[in-house]
Amino acid sequence: MGFAFEAVAEERDKAAPSLRRQVRRTWLVHELVTEARELVESEFGDVWVEGEISNLRPASSGHLYFTLKDAEAQLPVVLFRRQAMLLRFRPEDGLHVRVRGKASVYEQRGQLQLVGETMEPVGAGSLQLAFEQLRERLKAEGLFEQERKRALPAFPRTVAIVTSPTGAVIRDFLNIVGRRHAGLNVVLVPAAVQGESAAAEIVAAIERVNELAFADVLVLARGGGSLEDLAAFNSERVARAIVASRLAVVSAVGHETDFTIADFVADLRAPTPSAAAELITQAQHRVEELVAALENRLVRAARFAMMQSRQRLNGASVERAGQRLFALLRRQEQRLDDLGFRLESAMRQDLRQQSAAVAALRVAVLRHDPRGRIGKAGEELAAKRSRLVHALSAKLAAERHRREGLEARLYRAARTAVAERRGAWLVVAGRLNSLSPLAVLQRGYALVQDESGAVVRSVTQVAAEQTIQTRLSDGSFTSRVGTVMVETNSTGKKKEKTKKR
Image 1 (cartoon, rainbow, N blue to C red):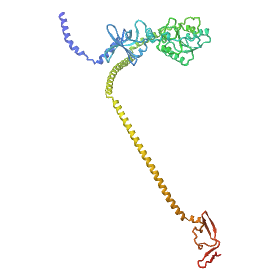
Image 2: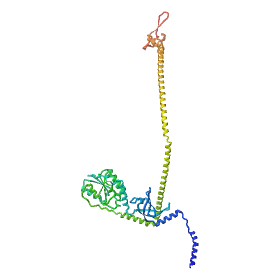
Image 3: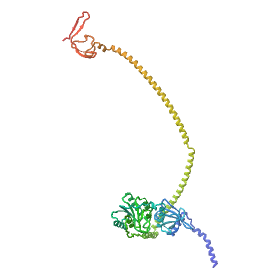
Image 4: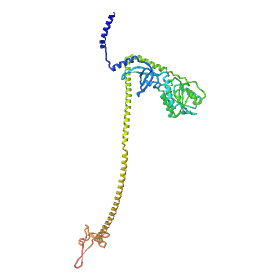
């Protein structure tokens, strides 16, 4: 039997290499990594991992990247933006936390990682941790100091109260004010005091009251509740809006044992909204404490039910394909963030190199600074300009003197020429005047013209009844010829010439 067993074993050993050669498979890298990722995700689809945060890197996309480590090992963790926004505290290096999610493989690096769904601190709750972190930060800024806070007006006429319009807080507040100070005006500024939108509505209400400036005192009021119920009054946005308010702010949130960030930064903390009404109206009575406790079990139960439903639907093919597509999208987002980090590092390195090159060029430029030569050239140019201006001024003065001399000579020559021309003109005018017929007429003579304008030099040129014109030195006149007398040369007798009828 032993011999047969050994023979069979030998035959099996001989056949094993050929069998291995037949079933051997060569994997591509991405195939092997993808297969490993699917195996890891199917085996570790919902796990809790506890460790210490290190190397925390928030990305501009809103995703959180950090390493979860203990004394023996470390595991990269990615918390995508949608999950990161639901955190109640601010993650930081060195914080001991517990992360729930699924194990996966980042294919681009072949690296095991944890894709987180939720995270909570180990020890204190997330809301308590966020509360303590914000309190320490605002305290370091001096926002809790008593010297910064303002006193309430002694006799306010109008009080603005920011609270829910449907809660018991406003009814109790109005009841106490009505009994103790009927003349006090109370203006309700409605706002949600619980839920995700509560902080934004409270900040908007504070800003609106300050903008309208109709109130003397501002009251923030809400009933008691758990730390999650009071989360809006532990918001940094609400705290900074209270600090920026121009009106005195009274915080009346929760019960006497409840403390919120709004209580620390407000000008006055009232244990309850009813106590706030008594403090404002200077009343001596206290009213029974307001009870408005809201539990967070519904939110947690709904979240747990959604998680269970998601796990039950993981087996469905369509849902599984959607999950795989969603997981692929997340991996691509992670790769994009990784490339973004690398690009940012490369840009910083390139910026340092460019800065060094610019510094070297600046030194070289300063060593060959042309401003000295430019200044010297400017001085030489100014001196040449001054000399040129002086020379031009002298030349202009000489030309002006020469021009004045020429003008004087031309004036004298013109006067001399005019005088000579005037004398010659007077001589010619005298001669012309002596020959002028007008001069003869001035001596008593007359100029006779017939009807055609011809000069009558003889009586033979006229006849009786003919019209003639006679011109004297001072004018002329027209006349008609009556009798024409002709003088003879030999006898001296006159012959009368009459007109034939």
